[in-house]
Amino acid sequence: MIEIRIFSQADGKISGFSVTGHSGTAERGQDIVCAGVSSLTQTALLGIMEYLHREVDYDIASGKLTVRLQSAPDDLTEAIMQSMLLGLMEIQKLSPEAVRISR
Image 1 (tube, rainbow, N blue to C red):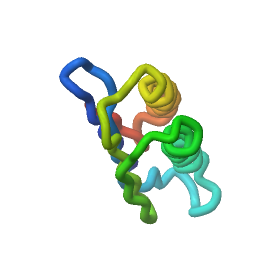
Image 2 (cartoon, helix red, strand yellow; image 1 turned 90 degrees about the vertical axis):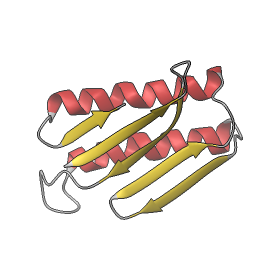
Image 3 (tube, one colour; image 1 turned 60 degrees about the vertical axis):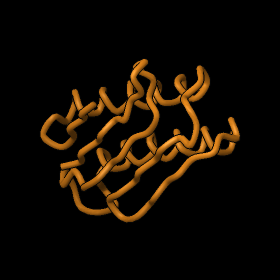
Image 4 (cartoon, rainbow, N blue to C red; image 1 turned 180 degrees about the vertical axis):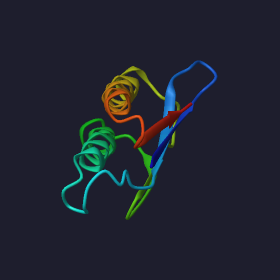
């Protein structure tokens, strides 16, 4: 199972996230659930770093991604994080046996 944890500030804005595990819904390299989750989360990280030029602490390994903003979330980082979360929630809806999101 892929476990996704969303880190939020007191105001509800997303300050980071962690993703661990594998969905196990198909063979390695054929798993579209893992591919979808990886694409959404890594694109959010890249967008925040490369497009918005925000400072981020992150750790990437096989079956693991942790991202934390170094400063308070702003409207632009929040738009990227919320867009990522919308996509992840849709994947969870389609594959609830493979993805779990907690806040």
